[in-house]
Length: 205
Image (cartoon, rainbow, N blue to C red; front, side, top):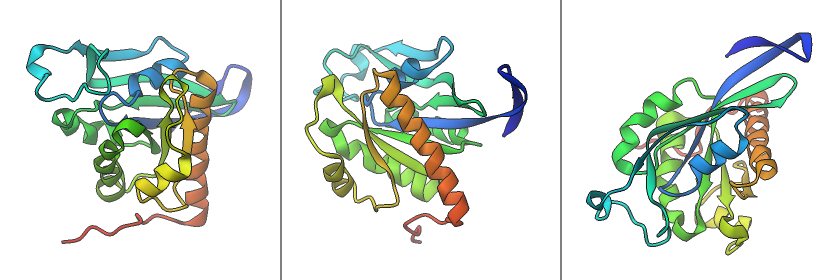
């Protein structure tokens, strides 16, 4: 992490760090990054074509006409001493080869969960737990304000222990989305203070 000086306090040290926003196809990653970013967000979206109809499941997202093919980028200052650079991952499995580059040097990850397609979260959770050993929080995106499942039900469905924060948000609302990012930073700092450096599951083989 590098350091910068806050314009509000020239003597204060500004810490900047990288956060990954991940999740399944259509979970709201691009929306969340755009909602909280203090700068015009950078998106790498492409129009979906008939060629992708047999690959991308649009049953729960019939109005979706574009998809992220590389990453989303934005930044947000969460307090006087910390700035977060946000990198949103592409959701489709065929673009997952980019994830290793996107997560390099990241402090942690936000996994957005769509309760209509919770199964999409399992490979994402496995990636951060087993492949990266990167701390994460799960944010249940309440599309259109709908709360079809409680946070506890989502935790149980995803087999997450009590040490993993599971929160509720609407990716279109700045306040709740910012709270998710703040919760991730607190989770990472708590883990560092507690000396927790191992994933909950060991990789077999």
